[in-house]
Length: 456
Ligand SMILES: Cc1cc2nc3c(=O)[nH]c(=O)nc-3n(C[C@H](O)[C@H](O)[C@H](O)COP(=O)(O)OP(=O)(O)OC[C@H]3O[C@@H](n4cnc5c(N)ncnc54)[C@H](O)[C@@H]3O)c2cc1C
Image (cartoon, rainbow, N blue to C red; front, side, top):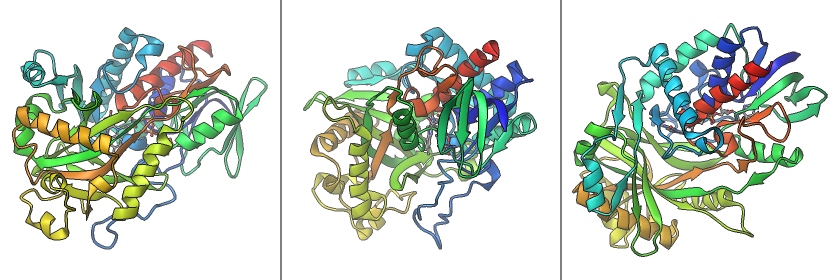
């Protein structure tokens, strides 16, 4: 089967490539290959009753399928060059922001209308943070919420399904270079195309590495972010979340000078587990619908770890820490801040007594047996710093879930059109190591689609 363009991966990067191609070059024959299910068939078997924790499905419904890793996410589209990726280094700051705004407009057209756009511009919290050794990063945040995010994806799929050939449950195994294009191989068939967009996200990181080795595409080691997810009563952070929804706050530790940052804040949300290549880590999300909201707010506290030569495997380092926590806790570990400070493990009885009710059924344990001292010290320091702007953060009953690990793909060498050393082979989204967010991944998809539409 021959196509003009084949897209590998139906996450935000792949979807926005397909969408933009359907608008800018509707005559092109386009196919999308996705290892996971179509949206409506994506269902995690954990029901909290018969199946309480991750059973390691062949393709994780949380991470894979139409919508990619973001399908059940909180749907926070951060419109900023300050975090979420380094797309601007390739395409320029202005263009990156323009594309993120364009993505936002499409999301609004496909069901997101009426959702709130928060902004740090002019916020009084900037000053309050600075006065306490904390730094609030600039951003506009469109919060779709898990439910509206799903509706938007559903509508975009309905728009695309008759214009693009979708192959679900069809992981691509290999990419071969042929004359005038590429051949992609699945376990059953092979397909050819003139242009190929690879957008395989974090779940495709190992595969991406393999492809780069096979095709001799240069890569650079990236970083890994390691930390915990903090959960506390929503009232403690409500003054910040009501105004900003998501506040990205950075703190430099006194002890080591390391940077610790808040990440993925979910007001009235739930803590969730996720499975990346068999490793269970913690994450969080929240709903726009008040009926689905909880009493708690959660956010991650992460420390970035960069390695220099000879060690290149930053993801391997993060995986080992996550594996250790999985080994001790059988999955996610939860500990009260008070227990951590006193050097005690949390027990089911102590969690039961806690005034903060956990939203994830995790194993009570001791995070100090899992996290390296330097990382844990940084997290504890930041909790005390946050306590100054949100008193109560350092309460005994604040819950810490571990471990949260943000894996980044190796950074793949691409040019400003996001093409690899092979012309026509584009590598975008989180799979390229360049983006780490919904808005940046989506913007990278629009960017390459426009380039292809111009060229074909
Ligand atoms: C629980 C959770 C919450 C999040 N919340 C937010 C948030 O609120 N805001 C935000 O900005 N970001 C959030 N993120 C991150 C965001 O989801 C990602 O940055 C974004 O989805 C990246 O898009 P992508 O298209 O590059 O990759 P992905 O979304 O990971 O999509 C890649 C797709 O490729 C498929 N694939 C992989 N390998 C192959 C192969 N060999 N063949 C075929 N298909 C393949 C995968 O199955 C997957 O569906 C969250 C992530 C998670 C897991």
